[in-house]
Image 1: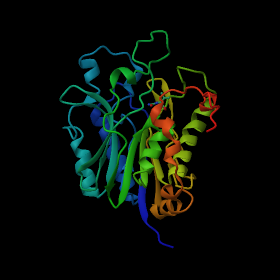
Image 2: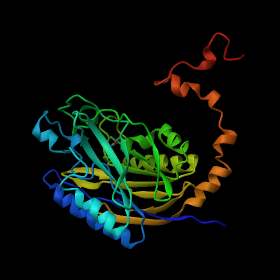
Image 3: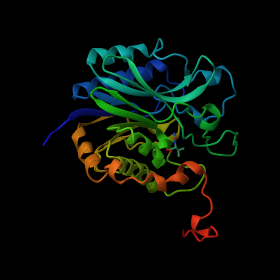
Image 4: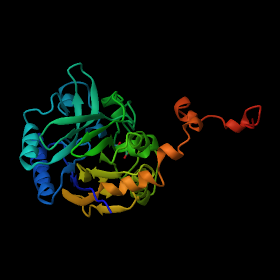
Length: 318
Ligand code: CDV
């Protein structure tokens, strides 16, 4: 049987507190990258907003206090060393950060950097959870809708490092369209950085369901689209606000092949066989043979759920 081994690592981060410097976050990322390379990884996946605390939990007025959390250039003076170390080690990486463009646009962004230290892909988060208004009585805010614009570059996969790699960020994993659009580009690996709080401010959810739903989305996304998913958490108690952790690498079979055991900085690694995805793509999920897009029109026509089609005057029967 043909094998296509690909060393795949996920670098979970423990908390990055508000007072922590960029330099300290980058030093931790360098240590994680070095460990991943020593274990044979060709690609290491870092979390969402890896360089700072998860600042959308705080209400911040426009100005320097807010701008402090964004990168105006990538690589910049403090992040360049990541690119140089990647090239020296011969390892690619994905990195999540807040992006402030020269035109003043703000995005929750993840980049794909190849083993030569070149940026080969960029994804700007599309599904932004939370709210834009101040909720002073809430235990914490989730202000992604205030601090970021909806990503304007779509869901894309790139041919890089002898694989097809797609990216998404945190809440994107809860929407099956994310994985399907990447699956339709024959993505073999989807990387995801995430920061999921243990408490949901919008509805009360038993704590065990937070982890269950997180894993459910990744395992179903992997299986239904015949691809590997590599998901890196920011975990633990960040300035008193707890995040669930649960970094994983999931096979196209939907099975979890590696899972973090801590809420700290931790590398997990799998020698992922990309040929497993090839077999799922050729057999059970042969899209070209079995998909019926002529019956999926509502996915593009409707955003919110509407009336049952069967309630139409014809009763839905033609
Ligand atoms: N950073 C995120 O996108 N977090 C969301 C929470 C707010 C529900 C998530 O889907 O995990």
